[in-house]
Length: 388
Image (cartoon, rainbow, N blue to C red):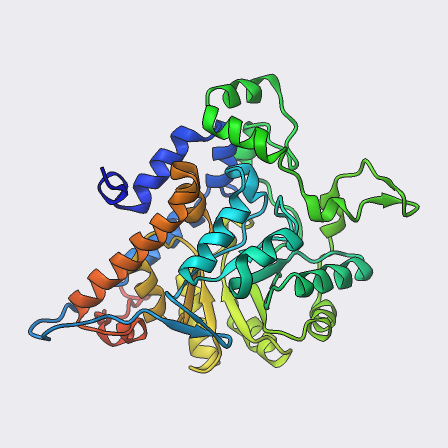
């Protein structure tokens, strides 16, 4: 039976992933913070975006290729950075980078990945982006950026929406620390998921390998401190300016929801703005990303590239985000649902699901380019909150 018959949608991959990874891994991947209200908020905002279908338009041949930051991509879709990706599925970073290179989609490696930039950069090739969680030590910051550039990453993504750690209650209940410290309960969960267990045995224990390399005492012996402490920078605008001076390629700022911030970031030298509420993993009081996207596009005008993530599950969702002002969309959890369900074959299958769904919906709308989705928006009356 073909993959399309068994797993025709991302939701099918999500269900299969939950059956194939240990519970504590699932809680890490699927959880948000607080009451997790942001996740359904993102979905509701997307589902409220409707389009006018077209009739009698003749044969439509959709063209999905998209140019962003000087690079051509096969779809307006990419792989967002996910920390400890290799915990979710063994070898995840390499598998996603290889899929991205073959499919011609951008792949963004996290600072807190389980593999080094030098390992993943050559696999991603010209599709490689690197995401920076701000190290507080300027020497470490400069060294990481130099290593990312030498490894072949062409776009830098600076994440700015982590002024402090969030509380992820589901992870706490699952007793999950980063890096993981296995408890008897977790070992039992691992034993029940043999494919994940054998893959992890071959790949090695998931660790923050990049940051571990900077944990040294007197420049020699490794420290016993948690490598994550090196990233607790609470960056400010001066930090952004320093990064801009160090990185001579395209610079994307991720985690923006405020139009005034977006305007200031443009003035500070950002090449693109990434509208994101971090999938609800940082702040449960954040607005739906789509609402922020529309406001930011109105503030910046049509020229500044905008990237969107938050709740995207289908090709139709991609078109919805583009219709409201995005130039490109990114997914994080979805690719990992696919890996958990099917291993390395899952990522390519999800790319095909998104492509096919975009084509099907563009034909219904009678458009040949994704950017034309805006012309098919269903006009809805504005809600007056003062009416009784």
